[in-house]
Image (cartoon, rainbow, N blue to C red):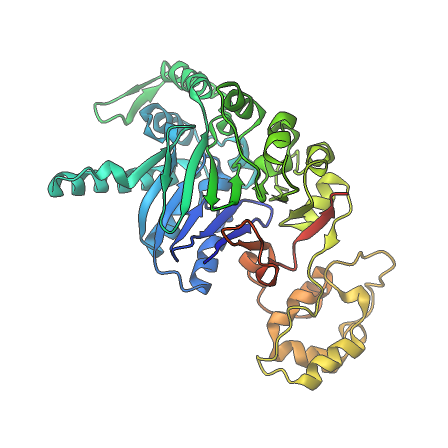
Length: 443
């Protein structure tokens, strides 16, 4: 048995899929693009996952919670782990007020979403919560067991075959400060008995609600294996965690907080959880904001504590950090015989493929004035026509200009996967690094 972790992040959101030792599957955070496409749902379908043991939502930013409606329609979920303030009716009112005012928060704006994008997702979750509670009343069971709330130090439980799960953040002060903002905003609108808004002050200017400051984080323990999923929990959350006596034992894998931002790093925390070894760190870049992540400063601290640092989107990480990231997958590593390909086809590719055509080479010195026939040999074009998935090895300029075909799955192109046994050892044979991902040498 092993514990599998799949981290997806094409640059506009992140999801973590957990393969539990007992064979069940859980998901932490969901995202979708502006057209509603949900990469994690595509990944689950490719693995023939028919149900989820749990769905966790760390905080109500669009890059962590949109796409839930599509996922919930397609795959049944047994339990929900939700950020603590999901319970607060004033959060729903705040988001509804944004929707009525036709306003977007900063992340919704960066992702070019429509007003109410996050509000609609939480509305879907609210409907599931009401249905679960009604079912519990009919069956005279405590349906609330279906929901656990991400709140530091209050939830630690077992999940079959030796897996222990603990919620670390947020703590009391962070939640109190966040709720104070909601309380202050609530003075500007009136709600009916059900909590829905009737009217609000037209002069009200919604404050920037920093959802990261109540982000949940999750520690997975399986024997000697420990994996920390930091969500977007920022430094102040970790300071409060340590200040209230919280500790994290040595870990093997870290999903880095807040896309590699400096405000997600706290040296005292890393020194403790990395003291007995050099864990792997994974960053999910966010390149749609006016301040793209990760940054060079955000990565600097990680390099002193980790053995390997991976990013799920190499080009995004290079653009934002100005650091050099190694290509993790060679163009031919993922080629398999199939889709009409024969061994001689692969030989043709290896023999005649020009380096400047590759997806991850620069365009410096590349003559883009050549015609399609001159740029791509006819044999190669014919091969791409028979096997359109090979388009993924082309540089986007050539792919978009010369050949039509389906884009490779975002779930695989921008995914890293790791498996650990209960002795804390990684099964390197199962490690997967998508062709869009990158690696930074930590030493």
